[in-house]
Amino acid sequence: MATYVLIHGAGDVGWYWHLLEAELRARGHDTVAPDLPCEDDAAGLPEYANSVADAVSDRQHVVVVGQSLGCFTAPLVCEQVAVDLLILLAPMIPAPGDSPASYWVSTGYDREDREHYDDPIDVF
Image (cartoon, rainbow, N blue to C red; front, side, top):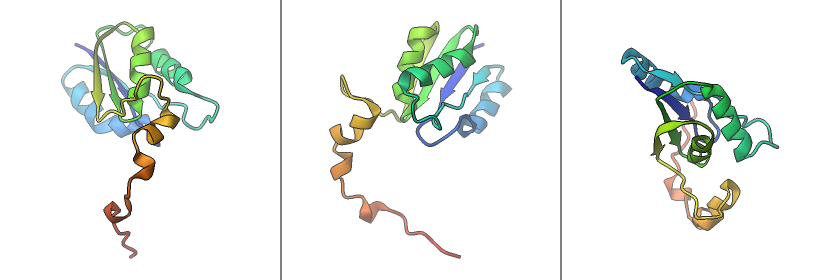
C-alpha cells in the first residue's frame, strides 16, 4: 500500500484533507497531512518542504499530492524524499523563476475584475 502525503494550499491546514484521509485509510493506505508553517512569516518554500519531508520520515511507497499553492512545495518535497508519484491537484503552476508572491502578478490575477464573481454575503 502507499503513503499519501497531502499538502494543503494557502490559508489552510492539514485537516483540509480529513475526508480523503479517512477514505484512503479505509482502503489500507497510510496518510500524512502536515500543517505547513504558514504562521511563520519568515518561512519560505524550503521551510515548507522541510516540514513535509520531516513528517514523511522513513515511509516508503510515497505519493505526494499538492493542492493549489501546495503545488509550489510538492516538487521540493520530491527532491528530499523518495517518491513514487507526484500529483498536482488544481495547481498553481509558476513560470520558471516565479515565486509564490510574483505568481499573482505574472498570471494577471491582480488585474482581473473579480467583483461581479463574488458571492453576496447573507447576514442572518
